[in-house]
Length: 301
Length: 126
Image (cartoon, rainbow over all chains, first blue to last red; front, top):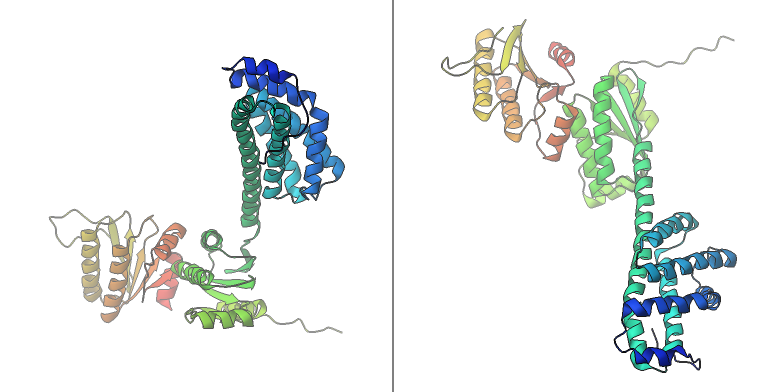
């Protein structure tokens, strides 16, 4: 924050200097009154600075101004009451609205810091005549402003994390269907990134399905897994081992040529696993092992 | 048809060994401690010779824990029984037990596993 005293003067200065021991309790209400009186101008300044800094670029100027107004009023409210509860609530609400629009954390932190800057400058302007008083005003203002910046940023990040967690959970539940295609034959098509947590959850689901369907064979198709590294390969080996303990054999299908090359390059040993080129081949192989014979109905015509 | 404890002075094992045709069917009712496991192993091997059993089926469905010692003992037993002419199959490993065994890298090498009693008997008959 740079000091930028300007030409503005204020009559309050003289009166305030008289009271040397004045502290935050007295100064803050005065500060609030000042911010209220200059609401329109400061708010305008702030909105301009936001646009200049290319923050909130995914929102229209009108929206920025509306949100800026609410944030401004909440900000002043916190300075006045000392309670961040209402602001917290508002910030959470705001985050919920702007997260889907692609607003980033740095933008939210950025706009709050800008407001802090705009208000501080207006204080410099107001009190620049009396350095001692300015210091005391800043002493009262800074901690409150920091708390506000903190609250807004934390609310935003928490909200974002909540959204991410919800999406992860939804993804976990959606993405691992265990399907029975023949008596005692299950298929498990895996789509998307496979990490350790998901692999574990998937294995658990598969083992329960093996018991429920009394499966003897499982075809795991990994065509939809974008990359297979050592950890993923090892968790697949674990899945196969656990299934064998339950009496079911596993056929892995859909290893692309890239994945095959990677696995050989990083030296993962999949020789104990039964792999077949594609899902169709895997199901055919499984049917053979289970004694099914699929034949085409001869054309009657 | 009853718990076959080798040492009469010791408490009976919480496991029963039944003979059915040429097979011995072992049903474990509760977690066994290390001494009991060793005793079960010895009893079984002895009965394999005495009854000329061709297969052993061990049902662990009642267990919600299978530690590394138990897993070792079972797979050793399978190997020893093999040397005396009997095939061994372990059945009824619960999903959570299977997960735990894999997570702790406890393997049952040389041990055939099957889903349940029915499957295990089918394998022994094959």
